[in-house]
Length: 142
Image (tube, rainbow, N blue to C red; front, side, top):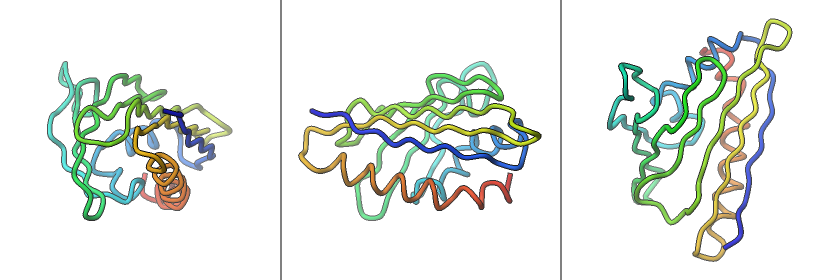
């Protein structure tokens, strides 16, 4: 099973604290992923979007799946994994945020694989397209 990667780099005009806070909110990821998102669980230790928080994603007619936040460093890094209900295996998403001339240097890496031939390639292309299309709106909304 071959791993595939999505890699997106973008510079936001808003500072890291604002972009991080916006993208940390599970519900705000609906546009990024082109999915309906439902929060299932808040994070541990009183951090609503932190480690242990879980969201359910539903994309079109496909079965829902869950993602769990595994690392949460304000305002620098968010890491999550698919933890339930997906044909993808080894899916890990990493968002990093760094100051850049008053704005934010944003890097988003996603690793995914599937035992079903062709699925990871299709998902990779759809994710890359959806993420890139949402970036300008994120800068306005954050």
